[in-house]
Length: 248
Length: 248
DNA sequence: GCTGTTTATCGTCAGGAAGACGACTATGAT
DNA sequence: ATCATAGTCGTCTTCCTGACGATAAACAGC
Image (cartoon, rainbow over all chains, first blue to last red; front, side, top):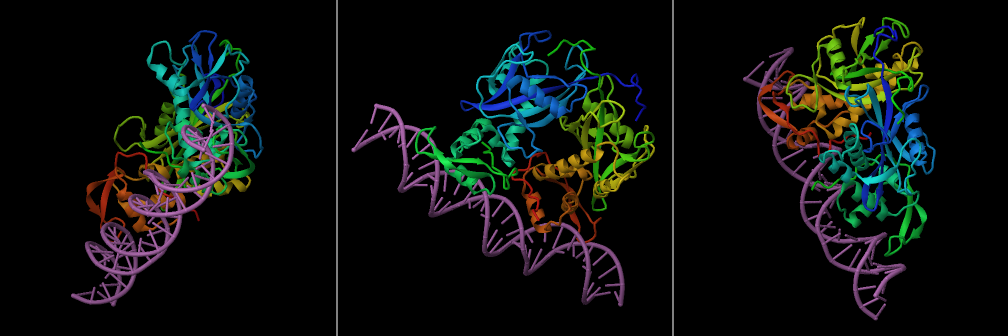
């Protein structure tokens, strides 16, 4: 490596952008905020902000998440129980032209959260909303309607990561409240994958996988129909064999 | 977001670090270079360097790869055939204390390459070598013998990525020369996973997966024993169902 | 040539998992 | 009471895998 003369390397700004996903009304939704300034003024964008000088990347993501949503991030490394959302690093985007003003490298993070009340506009975001990812990605074709910067690419990558990760991990429970039914978990899979799953085979699969679900000892009828057993997420994080996504 | 006043955000240096993996003599090996300067002078480190001001992250990784090894990176996005190694972004490491001199954010990339001739020491690296990853990671326990900076963490993450990715993709062929036998491919899996696989079941699996292998129309006897058919990597990139890693 | 060794390749069989789907149960709505 | 809605348990068939026997084609050494 070259010596670390501050003039020997180009200066970068480093930001974090967040792909915050949840399931609302049978649709996979992402949190977007309206930009209040140029460039892309008035357009929707992913929440995010600068990494501070003494802050780790994951900490910056957790801070931005709390500022935008009030959510407490749940670092997968810590065993800490709780309501916190799942947070993980997604990928880093550093095209020299991705921001027209200057060189910005953005470390995108993926957040999976249970269904939340209306987003609270916080920090420096003018307004925020949950939007179905299908709408957001379809709007990329209409000029002037797409997400700011390269955020459509980041969103698509985050959605793809979520879609593939619930196949072989128990991460789908991150979309559920602390106690949930098998049917609610199945509707998460159906919304994220955009397919219909057989309720009987799904039930057999998730209840037959050791450590995936532990009974919480109650029943609920909040979905109508016969009361369903309540479960909590078990300790298992890797599903083996995985949940198979229908190919059609 | 805040206005982009250059004084409003802290300055970062952005580097790329490379986890270059290959299979040599039945062992998974990584490319390491000896550091010629402080800090960690004389210690082994992953190859890497600064991202230039007008350079994309993947391009910086490909440039460093070429400087260190002469390898031509094969961007998975392009259909470009060839001898190029597989290159993909791994993860980004930005702990404020990961470099004692200043704030450096490193975007690590993973490279999978066929067995190469001896590495050529290039660029600003004093010397370079292939080292079995088991040795590199085991050396972390002895004081003064481990990799520089947080490179052991990066290496471990890269190895884990490679181990899991050959399960459900055809990426193991990236470790092979353009034409290879089923047995050579099996030895790649065995080296990366550190297990023994049944040759008969492996043969059935890889030849029975459509698009994984296409016959190259010759045979070779370079491994001894009965001549084996030569294959090329097929177009399929995703293996469904995946190759199962033995649990024991 | 014969024999043993090595590697490749084909085949068989049992067990497990998944898709398709029938049947029954327990609620609320009309 | 009847219906609609969900949840839960079983059955059957098919596919995939792991274990392993058997054969084929090269080479080394006697």
